Length: 165
Image 1 (cartoon, rainbow, N blue to C red):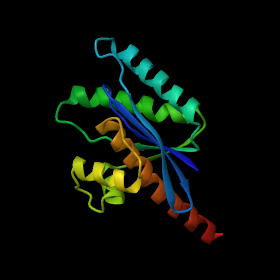
Image 2 (cartoon, one colour; image 1 turned 180 degrees about the vertical axis):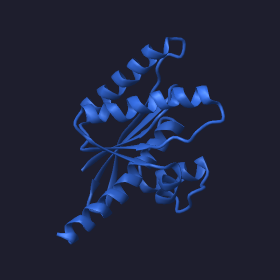
Image 3 (cartoon, one colour; image 1 turned 90 degrees about the horizontal axis):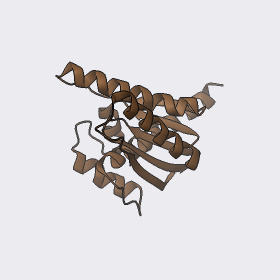
């Protein structure tokens, strides 16, 4: 199963793709969509959508996972981030994918084992879990962590569902 993890942001949205077969994860690709900052918000959101749509078309994932965002102290920043997150959730949904959402603490716990791990700890574990991975940015490393988290939790959910039948 091919999974895409997404780390939403209005300036930088990270994406990471892994293949999950049984209990084995394999790195496929990663990157960052970077809309031009000096555009109108609507144009930035369109560019974010178009960039993600191109990634989805190129790699054809089976499922998507998005990191939930935290609320900032600045309400205007929180609203803009929420709009970007809406695009990030919508793009895979428009491509027909199931979209799961995970909190940052859950992602860190799945990858590092501790919900309050540092970015450096997450990046180190992404490198260990996905040998040969050389992520292109901190945002794409976070997206790969989201994909890893989804691989673990989604497989557990599928097994529980099969056992319940």
